[in-house]
Image (cartoon, rainbow, N blue to C red; front, side):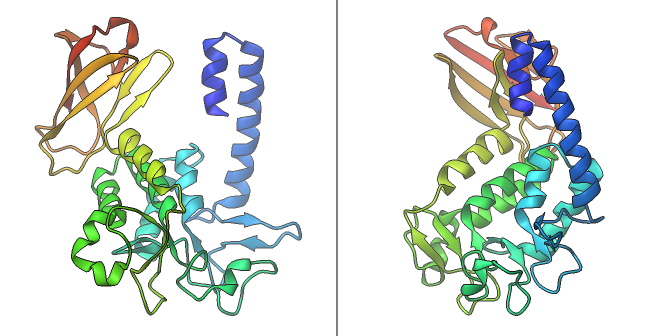
Length: 289
C-alpha cells in the first residue's frame, strides 16, 4: 500500500491517497494491538482464534518472517525492530543462516500444520529456508545494522561454504531451497537445488539494503548500510541509460547515515539523485556520517 501511495501522490490522486492512508492506519492498529507480544510479532491467528507463533507456545514460538516483514512493511517502530531482531539473532540464527521458526514442531503442532510431516530441522519444520535470508538481510539494513546485515549475507552465501563442501553437499555456485537446521543430524546440509527464488531475493537485499541503491520515480536513492569496519566502497551502476561511478567514503566507520552527496561536483540537499541532473557519465561521491 505504501508503494501504491507513492504512485498516487505522483499522479496527485488525493482521494486515493486518503483512502490508502485510512486502510494503512486500520491495518497498523490491528497488527500492533493483536500481533505484538512485547518482544516478537506472532505468526498469525487462526479462524478459531488460536494464536500461531506466540512466545507462550511450547513449540514454534519464534518465527522469522513476521519479524523481518514487520520492518520491511513499516509496521514495527524503532524499538520493536531492535527487540525482535535481537530475538531472531538469539533464537533463530545459526552459522548457516536463520531458521524459519524454532523450536521445531514435534508434539504440539496446530491442526493443519503440514510442516510436522518433515523431520525437525528440515523444510518448513525449523529448517533454514534460503529465500527468507534475503528478507532478513534487508530488514537489518533498513534499521541501520550493517554489521548484522553483512553477517547474514555471509552465512547464507554458498561461496562461503567452499571449505565445508562435505557438509553442504550441493553445488558451490547456487542456493538450495533450504538448509537443514540445528535440530537435524545433518545441520548445514543444503537441499533441493535449482528450485528457489533465493538468488533474486538476496540480490535485492544486497543492492537495496547493503549497497542502499533504490530506484524511485524521481531518481536514484543511495543510502548504504555497511559493516562499520569498511572504509567505503565503489559502485558502478547504469540507471535509465546513464552511467554512474559511485564512490562511498566511510571515514568514521559508520554503519548507516549520509553526510553529503555530490554529483559531478554539485552538492545535493539529500541522498536522492534526481534523474534530470544526470549526464551520460557521472561521478558520484557519497560521504557517510
